[in-house]
Length: 330
Image (cartoon, rainbow, N blue to C red):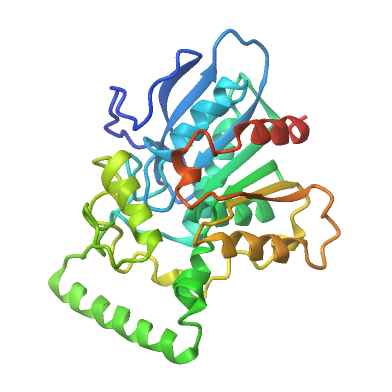
């Protein structure tokens, strides 16, 4: 398979400052669907030999210039070779049509990142971990259940995208009737858009300032994506996903075999995050009727909300993550 030639921005256009402790460059790799993915590689300076490596992705609808890059750079400062990549159909990565999501292809994206890291001359292929943030936390757990090369996984402020698409927020639409209504609406839209020959976008976060009567987590997202971490390539910062981009998630339970994950997993969530139930339930399901619980951990961070684990470096437990990966990537 041949990688496509992508137009990659060479300037530093991240939403966080560049570190002088690591070397940074753009890289590309290809997944098994033939889609070329773009990534930022961060390599700690003044190190020799084969390094433990970590692939980072998320949040769902973000780009590598936002949260995943912050995680990757910070972990590189701590001695890991890291990449933060844009998923298929988004950011600087390839794939048409744009702004689509797929539980299968997006899991493959993580596996392709492991492919890439496994063959780097300065990486120990037996010491590879992954970090998934928000919707990519669920993808990371799905990858860990599938890819035995992954030795350690962190799911940070995670969403189960299959659950939220099928059941709505807080499972408020968890009924056959509600799911049927949603399917009718989306499939009727498929027909209309096929007739027109064009796809619509679902809309990103609300513009600032957001109305006072919206739920806190809606305000939380907008202040991150439209405010302090706005990026021109970010879906959530602009017009959002393809309106039909997540239809296939509605009947794809990606965490079905999570209790068969043998490798180490750290699930971490903010205590006051609206999404905390995803992390708590994912951990409970992962450890239920499992023979592999000794290397699984749930970390609930007091008073933290969802986006605190996007960019609040005083809240993101980088020391804990470093210890977790050092313990399990050896």
